[in-house]
Length: 252
Ligand SMILES: [Zn+2]
Image (cartoon, rainbow, N blue to C red; front, side, top):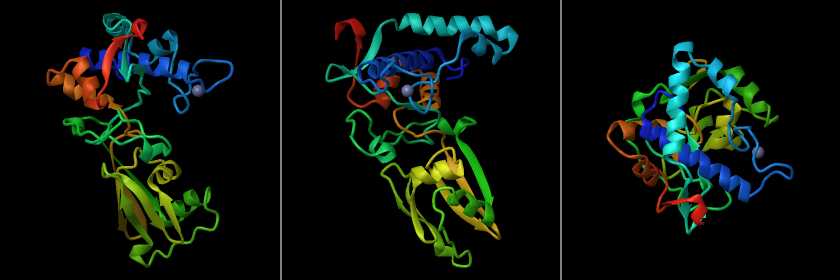
């Protein structure tokens, strides 16, 4: 989360990151560690030196102090459901509505990860993006997974969205002789989220995308928008995670 976001948003992020870490340490994925620093596996992490190198020099000390304050002001607090730490997923920008975990990763459903709407996310640079591909570029990207892909570009229906999830994201897309999930389409084509529309312009296929990230749990820009509207970190967390309680980690 950018350090220039509101204090209450950064405090919510501190609680979310702490909860996520403790959840991972309990529900171990790695034999030799509680958690790793790959964002696609566990949780992104950078050293203080690396963090400083990405900030402008005159902002370094004040940014760092702001984050230290947010961590200390929420010291020990974690998010719980049924007296257990939650799997506190978070992402950059929900595009206005979050997604359930089951629609992204399948498998188990988490009662606290439901679809919720957030206002104000359209004001952030992470909200809107586009990817335009030429016919052969689209084929090339889809071929990395589907070697026998064949699309008749003269037939409009040969590229179409077949199904949406409850949050309005793409569940299934037809690309010629294959039906591909929205999640896989996002990965194969490098889209920022699964919330997209497809338009055709001559030889180009354009993907107009809303939001950034998997869309599950807390939206960072949504948290900042809520904080700007006067919400506390607790209100932000209870908005994005349904039916949860905040507790001190020592209590459970
Ligand atoms: Zn990991």
